[in-house]
Amino acid sequence: MESKIAELEQSLSGATITLFNFNPILDGFVDNPAQFGFTNVTDIWSDNVLAVCPDAFLGEDGSVESCDVDVPDPDEYIFWDIIHPTEAAHQFIANEALDTLEIEYSIEVHPGITVNSTEDLNTSETGDTVEFTVVLDSQPTADVTIAISSSDETEGTVDTDSLTFTSENWDEPQTVTVTGVTDNEIDGNIDYTIELAAAESEDDNYNGIDPDDVEISNIDDGDIVPGLNLEGTNDNDILNGDLGNDRLSGLGGNDTLNGNNGNDSLLGGKDDDRLNGGDGDDVLNGGLGNDFILGGDGNDLLIGRPGFDHLLGGNGNDIIEGGTGRDRLNGGSGNDILTGGASIDRFIFATNAEFTAEDLGIDRITDFVPGQDLILLDQRTFTALTSIETEFEEVSSNQEAATANALIVYNTGNGNLFYNQNGSEAGFGSGGRFARLLNEASVSADDFLLRA
Image 1 (cartoon, one colour):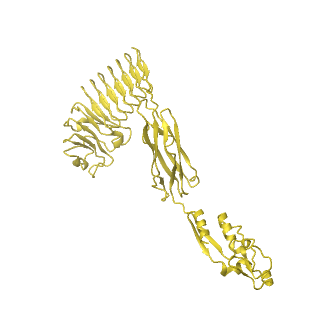
Image 2: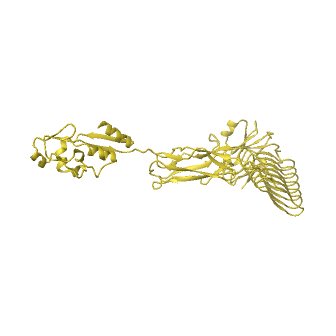
Image 3: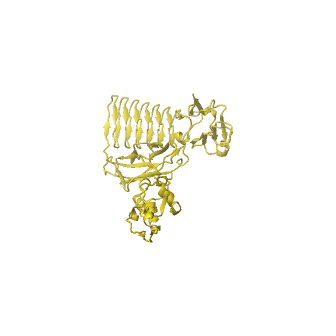
């Protein structure tokens, strides 16, 4: 019997099996088997059999002793047709004439998130894709959301930024497709990770569960996309680069030059030009004229040259040089280096949104001239500001800046410039350091301009 129980426990993972001796209630079982969930019961100890063989009894092997009457085979005494978890259990109980098993089992499934992916997942720079699936291990009581992202979108991108499982679809695997990206360089196979963030849910059992990330390799295609070499005319030209590393030269006229992807070199030439680097680490030179220069994504070099130029770095850690003329320099996001050059320049800090350190970065201004240049602060970004004259203060240490009363605080010891959003309260609130004057110029409230 112990061996039979062991077989059942092996076939029912997580089951709890309890054995009861059925002999004490045998008479009730024979009289009313349905109350125990059994049907089709025959019993050699029925009145009919005992009437013929009053001295009959069962031998050790289950055979009927001291009776010449034909009786059913003991293996057929009990047939369990309604409740039987497995064929093994059915057979086991049918083979026991006087004993039966009461089997109580439950398989406890713990909350969890299963990520199904094969080993050696590869995308390619030709755009090959791979897939993996995600599914919950048990039913949640509230929606479960998992954020999905690529650790390097220059190598591979995902087709969704999140997965959401409900109490209805929790056991339906959801598929994530990853597509390889070309970088137009021969750089070998690059490994990257599809990152699955910790689950967010009002179900405490699921909230915070961190599923496995998926490791992928992007196979290099060995190709370099050739760049374009385009030259305009003395008219107003529009020159568009492509995926490679392009060289665009506008020459004369009010030209528009778009580098697009790749590490491009754009030269506006004469007149008033618009230069847009796009993606990649670009070099943009406005040349003569009043130019508008936008770096875009990447770590760019922007050069205004003579003229009243507008230079906006965009995303990335950019180097911006205004050159001669009254220039406006805005580093955008990232930690930028700003040089105004000769004449009256404005260093602009504006994001069209409330101040965050990520949006602004910490820019270094190399040549600020008090009384000549201006630092322009946009009120949509520096929302606590209403007046520079009454909300500017100088200190001699960063610690003093964090507890100053003013909202714009300048450390004369190292040139650091802070937005002290919460005033005299400890720390900077939602503000922080956003610039440093490398020449440690002696500035005052008059060197700032608040733009509403």
